[in-house]
Image 1 (tube, helix red, strand yellow):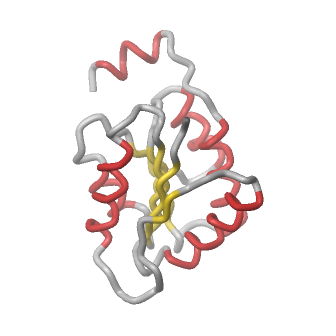
Image 2 (cartoon, rainbow, N blue to C red):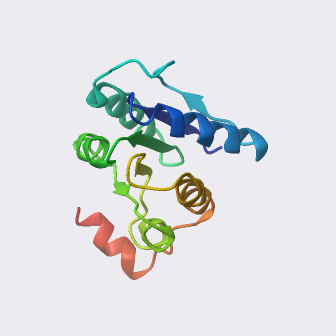
Length: 141
């Protein structure tokens, strides 16, 4: 069964809470790895937590939110078998799953509207990897 792990830093905390509300409405189970409030924290600590959980099982996925999405993305991609994709719009989100088999989505809370961010999460969670010619490329990473 797919497990969803979600985390943020202080800048992404409010968007993380909105995403959790959406996941609750869709009756999707998730594990919030923190933080529990919007007090200042260091994004690498939370990106590492999610990446470690996601790499345990190929069916696990992660959602990471910080101010720009970049710090979380860079940190998560330091882990073997993690393919974190920083998504800016609906098309980049869909392609991250279809062609790159991304297993973590990173979002910039200061760069995306709430509406687009929520749609990106829905697309990320519902889009399946195409495989085929893309699998050969994934194996080269």
